Structure formats: structure tokens, C-alpha cells
Image 1 (cartoon, rainbow, N blue to C red):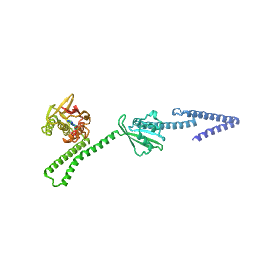
Image 2: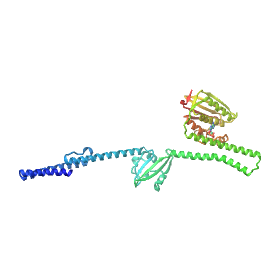
Image 3: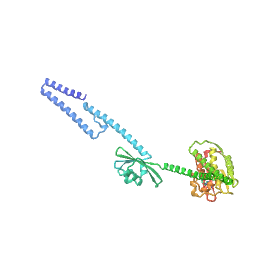
Image 4: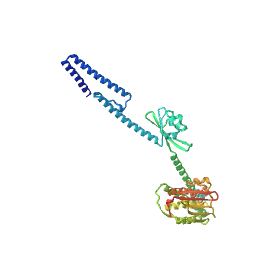
Length: 428
Ligand code: ADP
């Protein structure tokens, strides 16, 4: 098309020049052809200059316009520049989105060049690795890291596994850091905060160790007696009786431990709370009767005050939690002591309170009482049939009822365990 139009134009000029030559003089034909050629050369030169000027600042809005052949050229140029601008905008948009996503990641990301210099890093990496985006960009990462384990990891160049870093200041933090090579020369340094996960793993490890430890003692005792009986089959009846009694006590202890573990595991499964209306005065009477059974007349047990209320919650769970507090009061109060149960309003909140005049708890132990297997006095807890899991179970159950427990205690004077229930659970 381009050539055809050009040829037609020059063909017409030639035809007209011939016609002028034929009708007038050959000189006029020649002059006409020369003038026309000069005009087309000027036209080309002007448009070439406009193209040249535009190329210095190419912008889709300033593409020049023209006539005839050059209009075609400029139109095509406009189309191309416009589609280029569109795809550039699209790319810039995508890149922006990627950058925003990388910035928002909770994991730290650092992009390193082939010489381990920082090209880019996100805010999380600044917190994890103590980097500064503005000043550290372009610096070699090994010069900036304070953690010896991480420097060692980068030096060894074995990136098949992550390295775990533990820091204590400003707060306790455990990080998992891994280098991932990409793009043949560049590398990604990823850091993840695994403090929570590490804590859970430690709790889990401690828990398994504690359970094993708790089971080992009764198992050793029972195993020892059985061994004695095998070795000495003709043991006298009273000794045999005594051994049997001790074995029974130990198996009871294991039974209690397994029961408490099962209760904890059930609570942790997070099944939905089956709610019902629990009659408070009735529950308190039940707790008192049970406490008297446990005390065997060694304590004076009273119910101080009962507001006639009902509580929305699970009867069995509440019975188990509050019963645990009451049984602790009995177990940790020497004979002759007093135990008071009450359901009272403290401010706006309804409270179950159990008060004893027992051995009390030193203040440093109070915050840890609800930890699993935490006991102030191991021997006393065991002798009174404790598993060390009672208050951990209480904590779980209260949490399921959005209730909170407050402990007030003085060593040698007694303790008060108060459970506050949210007002929306209490019915008049
Ligand atoms: P345990 O089975 O050992 O009683 P708990 O979880 O019920 O376990 O209680 C944890 C620890 O809290 C007990 O070992 C005991 O030292 C302390 N404790 C709980 N209740 C009382 C109380 N009323 N008076 C004194 N100490 C208590």
C-alpha cells in the first residue's frame, strides 16, 4: 500500500509534467516536475524533523499528526506507543501489587545480589534481623548481622535447611531463617518468627516428660512389689496385705492421673460448650456435701451466702471446676481449719468464692498455679491424692465459660479462690 501510493503520486507528477511539456514547452514540464519534487522533499524533511523532535521526549499524548504517507506512519507509531504504555502500566501495577504484598508479609524477606549485598528488604525483615532499609541497602549482609549463628550459616553456604536463631533482647524471640537461591545469582533470605511454635513444642516436650515422670514412680513401686511376690511366694499374710494395699494406692494414683489427662485432652479438643441453666444453691450444697465427705469431719465447712441465681453453663464442667477448688481447700487446710463457700455479688459480677484457713501460698507461686503439674509442695500434693493438673483443668473450664479466677493468699494464714462469671451468664 505504502509503495503503491508513493508510485501513484510520482506517476501523476510525471504524467502532468509530460502533459505540460507536450502542450507548452519541455522546460515548463521540467520546472513543474522539479517544483513538485522539491515540495515532496520538504514535506518529508519537515515530518522527519517532527519525528526526530518527538523521539527526544516520546509520549503517547504528543505523537505528531500529518497528512498522507506520514499520517500512516504516525498512526502506527501512536498505536504502538499506546499499547506499550498500556502493558507498561499493567506491569507497573502488577509489580506494585507484588511489592505491597511482600511489604505486608509477616515473614521477613531480603533480596540479595550475587555478592550478598542487600537489594531490597521488607519491614518484617527489619524487625527480625535489625536491618535498616534506607541505610543498609547495597551493603553486604554479613557485615550487618549481629547473630553469630546466622553469619556461620551464610559462610557455610549449605542452604538445604533453615537455621534457628534465639534472641533474648529486647524480648524473647525465636526465628527460623533460610537462604533460598533464585535467578542463578540472586538469593532470598527468609526469616520467620517461630517463638509461639517453639513455646508450644517446649510445653509439649515438658508435658510428655512430666507425664512419664508422674507415671514412673507408681509403676516402679507396683513393679517392685510384684517382683518381691514372685521372688518370695511364701510371704506372710500381713506383709502381703500391706503390699497389696500399697499397690492399690499406686494404681489409684495412676488412675487419677489418667482421668485428669483425659479430662484435659477433652477440654482441649475445644468441643462446643453444652449450655444449660445451673441452679447455684443446689450446686453449692452438692459441693459442701462432697467437701464434707473428703474432710471426714476434720474441718468446719460452711456456706456463707447464696444469692438465688442460676448460671448459664455446663453443669458437669462447673461441678468439676468448682469441686476442684473446694477439694483443694480441704486438702491444703490442716485439721481443725475452716472452709467457707459462697456465691456473692462483687460489684456487678457474680462470684463463686472458696475461702480456707489452710497453709496458704507464697506470692511467687500464685501466677504459676494453673500450669500443668505445678505444685508448691510436691510431697503434700501427692500425699493428698493430687495430680498437679487440677487447677489447669479449672482454668480451661473457666475459660470456656468466659470466667476469670483471682487468688488471694497468705502463707500460713489461708487462701481465697474467687471465680467471677460474666453478667450475661447469670440469671436472677
Ligand atoms: P494438686 O493436684 O497438686 O492439688 P492443683 O493444680 O489442684 O494440683 O494445685 C496446684 C498447686 O496449688 C497445689 O499443688 C498446691 O500447692 C497449690 N494449691 C492449690 N489450692 C490451694 C489451697 N487452697 N491452699 C494452698 N495451696 C493450694
